[in-house]
Structure formats: C-alpha cells, structure tokens
Length: 587
Ligand code: ADP
Image (cartoon, rainbow, N blue to C red; front, side, top):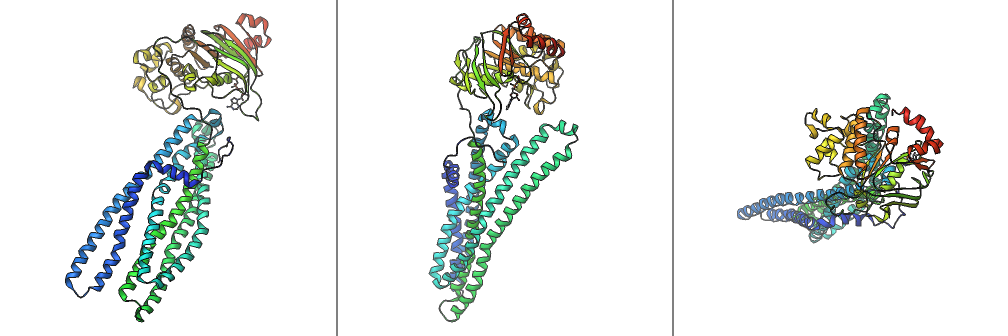
C-alpha cells in the first residue's frame, strides 16, 4: 500500500545519501568497529605467511615452537578483536534503528489530521516497527564490510600478486565472470523485498481493521473472511520474502562457487608450475590459502549489495511518511497561574471541504460567540456542526473565510498555544488504554489530587471509582473497553475540564447518560459556563433549553441564531427539530 503523496515531488536525495545521513551521528563508533574489524582481518591474513614459514622450517625444532606460539596468539587476538568489533557494530546498528524510529514516531504524532484520515494506521505502524529494522544491517554491517572487504580484497590480491602474478591473473578472470551474474541478480532482491514489505504493511492495516472492530467482526460472523484477508497479506509477504531469500542465496553462493572453480584451476596450473620449478610448494599452498581468504570478503561484498537493496526499500517506505505534511512542533509558554478569562469565537464566511473532490461542508458559515455562557449548535446530521469544532482546533484549515479565537485568526495562533486554550470532548468520547488517572489527567499532567477529586465528584465518577479494586489507578483496557459508554463520556468531560480551558467544546456529550447523571453533568457544565465559553453540539432538548444562544445549522450554513423561544417562533426547521428529534432522543 502506498501512502498518498500530497507534496509535489522534489528531486529526491539518493538513497545512499539518506543512509549515510542515518549513520552520520554514529560515525565514530562505526569507525572504531570498522577499524577493529579490519585489524581482525589483518591478524587472520598473517596466518598463511606463518604457515609458509612453518613449512619452510620443518627441519628445525626450535623454529617450529616459536611459530606455533605466534599462530596461537594470532588466533586468540583474532577472536577477541572480532568479538569487540562486532559488538560495536551491532550496537551502532541498534542506535541507527532507534533514531529512525524516534524520527518516525515524532513525525507520525505531528501528522496533519487530514493525512491521517487517508492513511491506514496499521500500515503506518509497520513502517515504524518493521521497515526500520531493515536499516539495521545496511547502515553498519554492510557499510563496514563494504569498506573492509575492499581493503581485504586489495591486500589479499596484492599478496597473491607477490606470490605468483600468473596464478593471480587466472583467478581474477574466474572471479570477474561471477560478478557479472551477481549484478543481474541483485535488482531482483530489491523488487522482491519491496513486495514483502508492502505486504507486511497491508497485513498490519488489515489486522488493525479486524482487531479495532472485533465485536463487529464476531457479531457479523466475519472471522473467516477477515482471516482470509490477513492470510492473503501474510502469504504475499511470505512470497516476497522467499523470493528475496532465493536471489540473495544465489548471489551469495555465486561468489563461493567462483572461488571453488578458481581453486581447481589454480591447483592444476600451480601444480604444473611447481613441477616445472617456477614456484615452490610453499608458495602454491600459500596462494591456495589466500584464495580461500577471498571467500569472506567476496561474500560480504555481495551481501552488502543485497542489503543495500533492502535498505533502499526501507528508505522509500520511511520517506513516504516523512514526506507527508506535518503540523509545526511548538513549545508551549508556561501558563500564568490563576483563572484564565473566557475566550471568544467567531466564524466569518468560512468555506471548507474535507478534500477537493468532496462536496463543500461549510458554505459560508458566519457566527460570533461572546465570552462565557453556553452556545448550542443544532441541525440535521451532516450539517457541519462537528466540523465547526475541527476547524476551531485547527485539525483542518478553512479554504476561505476566517475562524477567529479571541478575535485572532486561528492560523495566526501558535498551534500549541491555540489548543492550550481549548478543552475538547469528541463525539465518541475516546478513552486510551492505561489507568483511569492517566486518562483523566491526559490533557493536564500537573493536576493534583485535590483537583482530581473535585472533578470526579462533579462528573459523578467518584462512586463508580470507589467500587473499583484499584480506584482511580484501575486499568481501563484498550480504548476503555471496561467502562460503559456513559462512563467514558464522563471521563472525557472530566479530562477536558481539568485542562481549565478558556473554551470548552462538547460534542453530543450527554447522549449516553441516564437521566440522573445527565442532570448532574448539566449542572457541572452550566457551572463551567459561568467561567468559560462553552460550545456544545446538542442532540437533547434539555441541553438546548439551558443554552444562552442556539445556532441552527443546515446545508453548510447558519440558518438562524437565537434563544429557544425565539427560534421556536421564527425558524421552522428548529421548531420541527424541537418537536421531533430532540424529544425522541429522550429529553
Ligand atoms: P454534523 O456534526 O453536523 O453531523 P459533520 O461536521 O460531522 O456533521 O460532517 C459534515 C459532513 O462532512 C458530513 O457529510 C460528513 O460525511 C463529512 N465528513 C466529516 N468528517 C469527514 C472527514 N474526516 N473526511 C471526509 N468527510 C468528512
């Protein structure tokens, strides 16, 4: 699944530069690990020379003992350095992944709401969790082995040239042929890996879809169909992964195969040269050993190219997210202590549609709300009432006209500061997994226990909490599944009030409350309205009648503004709504 790219395509930074960018902060650790790896190879490389000397000095007992001790030391040094080097590299690799994940997470949380509307959360999650792990080896192991392999190859080849240039010539021809084949294989790794990662994204998206509505899935008897969807994505990921593994295996072993072939050729030709006296046996053995020493750097080089292809896939998928428009990250100035004055709100000929291809939701909305008091928005479903709140919070930007808070256009406000003025209770009163306390103080982390206690009493949550095993520290489950709908609404209202907002936006907040709780909450909200400006999307007549003013919306416009009595007399739609919808809703 590809994310929508709303930005014009810029000339893209090449993948290798992006990858180097990830590595840059860790270059010292990487350099250290790389150097140690190099020294490890060098100590290994010295071994054949020792073997050669050992074979040459077979006659004298003394020489052999010294050389055997030297060999043992080399072997031990090799193992110890190898361990330190690979630890350093792996550590750096993890740091690269951490950094990429942090960047992505920050970006995701600041994405504009309009972008999130169009993306699949599960797919976004897979980019943070799965794709970033692909960066692990390419930015460290492969990068280092690219450098160390080249150096090792050059050193080994130089030593081989010193031993016998003719045999080296033969070796190079055989190895060169293998590289042609490898170049054909490597792009296929990239394609297969890309498909695998896309499918992992689809799997995440489908999983989120099914688990996010598991009760509906079960009630609809759709488990098997959802399983088939998930299975399809999992199988597609399997196919891509297997195909990538196949090409990777082929590429990796072509190098090994080429060396074996070269070994046979060198053995034949070298044997003839020994017989003719051109070289001695020790030289041939040393040469053959060097040939085997070519295997690891050759294999590493091929793997590095394969890893690079995987890294390129990850970079592309990560870049699709980081390229999406995000909100500015702003710092919030410290709040002055004490009561904050109530805010004013005004819409001036606001026009808005969610997407260019969708119909207009606001078609010239104009109204003003003075500080303090309660303003109710009523109108048929789909009239654009909730959208009024979304524009005040600047989840979306109006296409034309102005949304003003305190007489200042919302786009002139620093975003964090604007939202700091507002307490918002969404229509479905979301509760996050965690404890009740975490949920309550979510918008005001500095809340003390006295404030918390007061708000619990005001929202009638105290008796419910008293019955819970861990009181306010009881976990509420995923999306607050252990709470009733009415309890979730009250938690959401308490959360909004604890922010001590200058402007309180309530969206159909009392729809799931019983009469007693509703009456209590109405009191709390009325009390809040004496200090703050309260805007409420109302569905109940009881809410509407306590409002200081009522804004009637229909077809993306404001039809009428007035008190209940005024509107009953003057507005037919309002009279109709009052007579039917509100009342049937239980007021
Ligand atoms: P109300 O609150 O009056 O019922 P809304 O403001 O929620 O109406 O929605 C107004 C219109 O905008 C509806 O037709 C709805 O389908 C559409 N709409 C709401 N949210 C979105 C969205 N995120 N993307 C696209 N269209 C949306």
